[in-house]
Image (tube, rainbow, N blue to C red):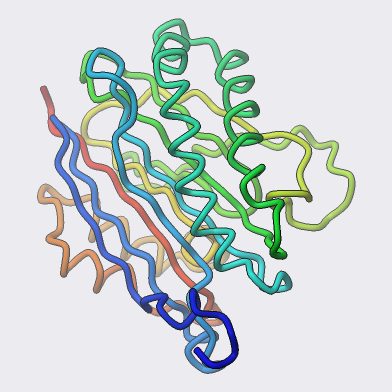
Length: 266
């Protein structure tokens, strides 16, 4: 507090949220990592769970962001960018809805770049920010089977199908300027987008690299544990989800933010 960073002083160590929207059930948590606990620094991850768009084009919006530690105010950047992204994507909800129905990934990419450019404009003033961002948009109309994920930087989307985690994140075009992690607002070229088709029974996991790295990198026990915990017949309670999301993974002590979505059969 006396160091001048009031935002950090009031940032909770843990966020927990959940929702039921039609056939969809959401569980979401953002937890400060052991490394930040040890250093006495605040959680730099952020998340947003909300609905956007008018009733006839309503979308469930889920967003996660991971502030890059080298930027002094990255924790503020991650917090602000998820909310600003939601506001700007709300304005484009009808266009997104139409593009999903048309299976138009190119149009979705163009919408994403316009909306996220508007969102990061809010971060360019005053403070040093750097943050990744991943946004998943799901129509609340169960008849529409397409979803879209927008991504900048590490982390992303995974789909649990038949007990296995499969990447649902946009694939890089292979032409990165360098090996540094892309981050908003300055160190990125464009927002990647991927159109997905999912079916009831599959579980969607949107997360920062605090969970996607141990989920996919040489830690099969961790991946199998979460597949068993979140792939069963019952959606976990909020308290169980928080406990499961905090499962330790050796050598991974970063903040961990994860949002999962289950869908009941119509």
